Image 1 (tube, rainbow, N blue to C red):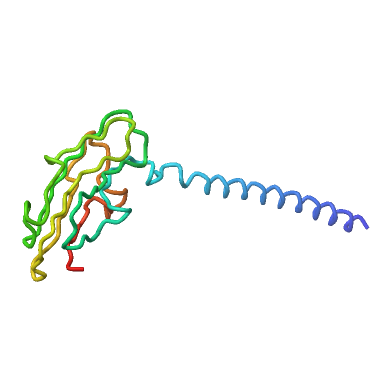
Image 2 (image 1 turned 60 degrees about the vertical axis):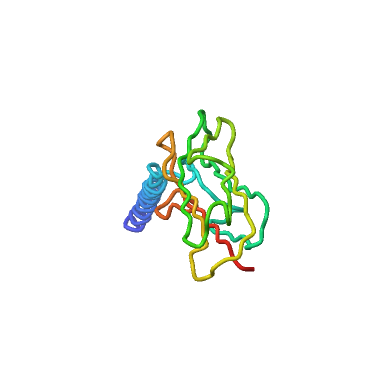
Length: 172
């Protein structure tokens, strides 16, 4: 009879020990899981500048278009406490000629986005002119640098999406 009571006591003690071990294991496991993300950064918490047209990095205009179009540089991912200067280049394909196919309305290769503003356009006036479809009928607007330098060019990530806008003039 005493052996039966001793066995019951030992079983009770083992159950309590196992509960305590299980509880301790769960605490360790939860603390390991919760500490995994402490050094990771949210990618869109980083400041960035993009160039796009209607949220696209490539767009088309028809050969006989005759108006002024706006293409926006946009800031994102952070609040900006100072003006942002964007230096860009415009690369014209061999099928287009300035003054015949298009005209830059926004002069220069730099645009300043004032503090508190998150979008600033550059403007291109499209002129009606027949195209040679065997040539490169594109204009590329490419972000070259940004001041302040902590601002990423394009969306965060290795692809730097929206760091360049391609506008193709097409024959309908």
